[in-house]
Amino acid sequence: MLNYTKMFVVILMVMFSLLGCSTIEKSSSSDNQTKKETTATATNQDKAVSQQEAQPKQDLAQAHLDNRYTLEKKLLPPKFIITNFEIAYDASKKEVKYLVDYLMDLDIYESMTKGNQEMYFSLEYPENVHTIYETPFSTLVKSEEPMNNKMNYQVIIKQKVESDISPQEVNDITNNLEKYNLHIADKDKDTIAIFDDIIGFMDYEPGVSKSEHIDDTN
Image 1 (tube, one colour):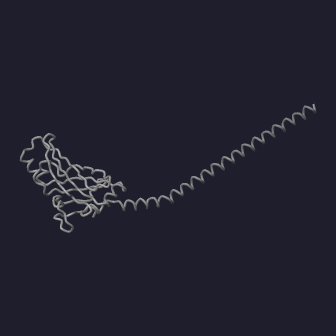
Image 2 (cartoon, one colour; image 1 turned 30 degrees about the horizontal axis):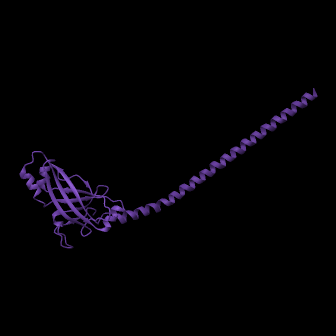
Image 3 (cartoon, one colour; image 1 turned 60 degrees about the vertical axis):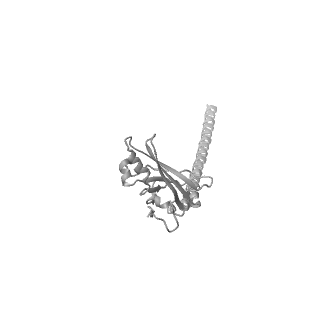
């Protein structure tokens, strides 16, 4: 009987010993996991702080880039010159084509190529013409993408007309270039420059322009 009692005690001691080891291992594993999570949290916090510190610098650099390559205050002679303006009627398509040739300087060229700026053109029609079209403005037309250091370009603005337009009305439109105002918009399609009476800029001379240039950013 005494032997059985001793054996039972030994078995109990072994079981308690094993249970204690298991508890220690679990506790150690839990401590290690907590340490890993704490380290990961600290690392993420450090990254977040670094990103927050870097963001103002990035914003400042972008603002400097935007200011350098903006098109505002640049689309006026002699930096931007209208070199030709023509009007033609395509009877087969029942549309009027307005051809505007223009010349830009290097500053504007770099604003569009390096600064990723865009230009959109729209014509404001004379009163007698927009009565025929039943709209005072053309749609916005995007300019060509500048390339190969080419500075002169052409934009074609098309306007559909009613099928019953008379020959006299066509003649009135195509033979009168006066009182068309050219609006130029940026990549947000906000008007940043207006050439009042575009025909007056075709023979531009510094300080002797026949037309008034309006910068809509004021």
